[in-house]
Amino acid sequence: MTQYLIGIDCGSTMVKAAVFDSTGKELAVAGRKIGHLYLHPGWTENNMDSLWQNVGEVLRETVEKSGIPPKDVACVTCTGHGNGLYLVAEDGTPARNGIISSDARARKYIEQWTAEGIPEKVLPKTMQSIWPAQPNALLRWLLDHEPDTMAKTKHLFMIKDFIRYRLTGEAYMELSDMSATSLMDVGKAAYDDALLDLWGLSEWRKILPPLKKSADLCGTVTAEAAALTGLAEGTPVAGGMFDIDACGLAVGMTDESRFCMVAGTWGNNQFISKKPVADPDMFMTSCYSIDGYYLMLEGSATSASNLEWFVSQFFEADRELLHAKGMTKNIYDHCSGLVAETGPSDTGIVFLPYLYGNPVDLDAKACLFGLDGRHTRAHVMRAVFEGIIFGHCWHFERLMRFCERPETIRLTGGAVNSPVWAQMFADIFQIPVEIPCGTELGCFGAAICGSVAAGIHSTYEEACGKMVRIDRTYTPNPEYAEVYQRKYAHYRKLLDVLAPVWKELAF
Image 1 (cartoon, rainbow, N blue to C red):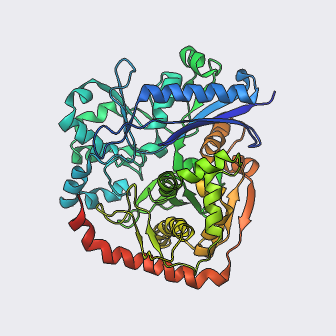
Image 2 (cartoon, rainbow, N blue to C red):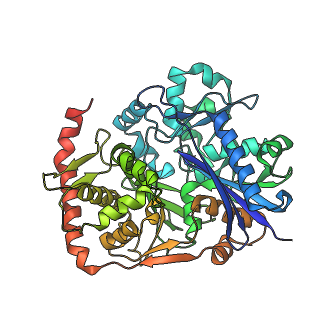
Image 3 (cartoon, rainbow, N blue to C red):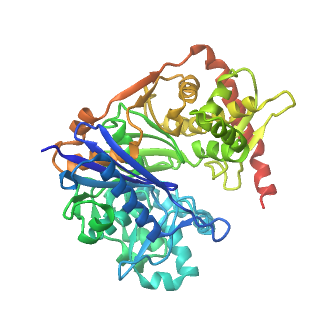
């Protein structure tokens, strides 16, 4: 009997599901956009009941499109965005709306803790920066502003753990996700009461569910969930993982030789090692899905979501024209075509991709610098493409203090859909860029984990060896090395020049 694997990817803007066979072949995929709620400035929430309904819809659609018998699904595994907060009451219903990882309401707690020197105290245990959308800060905000919510809360989840809870009725937290929340001693892979005390959360240890590993089986699909999703009752459900781990698995990151870069809603740049890094200049070290490895991450919301905003604000007329003419080319292909009309030396415009936050200053904002009357939309679009890559460069530089320069970069995310953009990554980094096969790598990484949980493959190394393939490679053009070095130097200089201005102009 052929066995199949289903991966679910709950991102901050989309929920997707995909069906794979044991060789990694993608058979069907479906997705739904997640509606966000912006109830106050700086807040970003979603309706957890609607989220679950969307998951049910994409699962049912995916199974139906694939044509596979639901009973032949060996395992269902979920991944999702890290941090944020998903609280469930005693009766299993949401205690409030879910909070997304881009939420900024708890900023003052981060500022207060930083002023008190707490980040330095906790770093040997947490091995990561603290920021407003982590559960420690959000829980403190809720204690001060929504005590009734906290009083009725039974379980704290990350987004994928909430979905697994709705599939199985069993409450667990998964290690890779929870190790990124500043609530754990990452080296010991355990909750830490001393940390909870420092955050003022000692009494809330009771809402932290038991920890499971990524490939641990964490229950089976209930009759109620089966009716909604089209899955077979009793289908095994694995622990799953943080979405950065899923991307790592999807590109075959099973040892120190691989480097993964994700150009999506967030720009993630990551490597794994058996030796963790606890350093104030490292954004995050967390437990990787593979036992004995840690994942070192530098990332921020400075990647492809900036292009999405730019296109939606300034290229809707182009989108409508393409549609009216019945052209198959989508708006992003159109934008890539504009960039291809220009060369690296044609413009000195610098774009800071800080529309949704940044890693350099809490008050820093996006900008286009260096415009003059000769510039066209093509020049500006090139600057947007380049600026997003320079955002990755900023993080890459920080990581290179802790690992060897990679021989190749395995790139995923929206940028891989543009050959022009993928080639620019290779040219700017002067490193070959490999694009893995597949379209839904978050789902794929979850399915790889599911193959290990179900015993189809005995190890992650075996699973990745049999399921991961490279689709194409982009070789850097050495002629562009100098001009891109100069442009990136301008990008870095602009950060220094604007540093004293951002706070003065903040409103």
